[in-house]
Image (cartoon, rainbow over all chains, first blue to last red; front, side, top):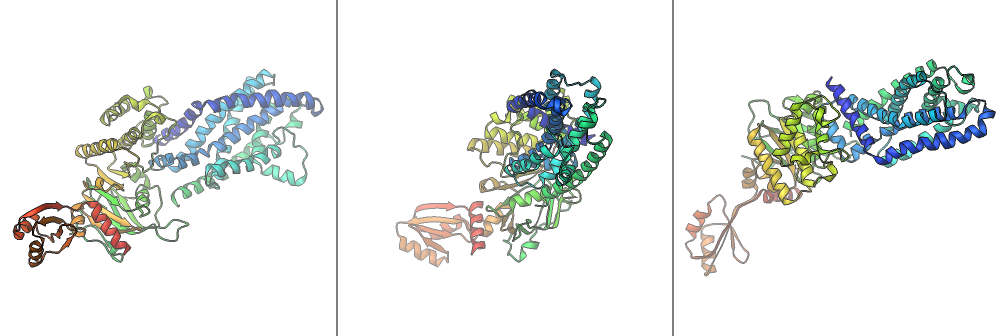
Length: 259
Length: 332
């Protein structure tokens, strides 16, 4: 129970920081507007008919998965900010398990990421993406899994970085290729073999595909949009999560005390 | 009797008295070499601090003070040696150690995005004192009373609810002290706690720490550059280049390392000079006579001199004099 309280306090701090940051709040509304209304709408008008599926729904699920995954992963880099502005000392000198610190951080960034995708869902509903209450309910566990996956991935990346500047460069380097390899806005049903291999290694691919599996379930377009069954995506994500989490936490704890 | 420790002795230079009960801090042959380091940042440091003592760890920049404190508070791993806090080993029982210690860091470690109270609440929950609630009003009454009481004690009052970024440097330090004391630590580490504070804030802070020692049987371990702050310590430990070079009560360190001097002058200087030579008192002439007392009292010397004096002044050693003398000796 005390560890749960500590996790809640660490998570609550992240959420509070997000709510108190006007810039991030504005971005959380403007970004979905640009991506769903402008990009999604344009793609639907120009490519929707030839693609044979709802391109706004496709874009929505792509950005939904990407935001959940990437926001949580990048949020973990605030552990580095804490180290740079000395707040990490306060956390690390406390009698809280290092694992709880990591879980708290992932939980906090998960809450932040979920807050950020609420406008996405609202814009998608406005643009008549066929989202039923069941779809929205199913997207909740998908969102949690996607965020946990992002958190574990971010934790692993964190151990390769020395400061926040390096973090930004590494995140750009790691995430940008995944936008294309994971099929964020363009289908990846057909890829040259080397890109297909890289695509299979991209965690974001499984996050986005899982979201599409939920939103497009029961539609005639399902087989043209969704690459793997939700069960397969969940199994791959769960395996990746365990590997990233164990390796990331071990490296993180070691790095904090074995300087 | 305290003695400066030679480089060879420093690995085993312990306190003059062995404590009967488990010391609050027990450090034995502590060595720390950073992963990319070529020399040991801490090189065989040993000392004990008894419960309730005010212990000061002194040394120049890079001496290994903060490294030592980081190891003692479990935020940094050690290379070899043993460290126990309140009987708990810092490696095997890190969590138990963390419950026993409070620390005021050299660099402020507050979250500027939160209010003072939110910073305290975060700490209180991490130390398992209270369950987490997202707002102050929902926190248990015990917590709210404790925060208000401590805020009043350090003179923060309602300012504690302001965002940290709007508080002055002195207020932030006070806030860190409240936070460090919330869980009633047995050992409070103060790592250069007054750095960046103005004179008034520094004085207030020390007054509060003195009051605190009177109220609670708390062990204080201080690192500082301000040697005057260590004058009140029960024991001081001077380290340089990772090794203990002297340890003991401040007056012992001073007596051993710095002579008390008597500054005198007379109208008949030649007679006074002859008299000092006859008394076998070592002296220098620097516009007047500077006589080293060599264990005698100033009164005894003045009586022996017999000449009518035109100037009379004694100069006592400060800890700073002893410290500088010691470090100069180390460099020689």
